[in-house]
Amino acid sequence: MSQIKSVDHLKEACVTDGQEFFILLDGGLRSSKLINYNQGTKEFLIDNYIDGTTQELTSRQLYTQSNIGKAIKRDRLFLF
View 1 (cartoon, rainbow, N blue to C red):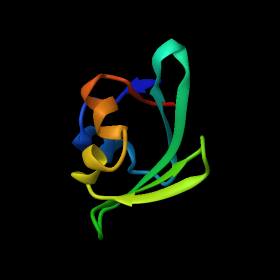
View 2 (view 1 turned 120 degrees about the horizontal axis):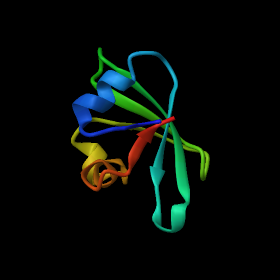
View 3 (view 1 turned 90 degrees about the vertical axis):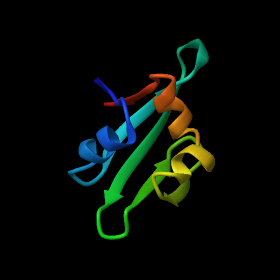
């Protein structure tokens, strides 16, 4: 398990396809995600295990359209 410290660190961690991550929630709960980064489109493809949804987001959208940016800022995003 390794903590993700920045969006650039997340990109590096996504070098191989289908890396599993989790956000540590209050009470010790986890929100698990499968995250890929496409260098061509510069987008993250995120599969949210908790509700089965998929998102395609840019680095900026991680902060505005998901909880991943907030988790990075709060030191709560981890690579399994």
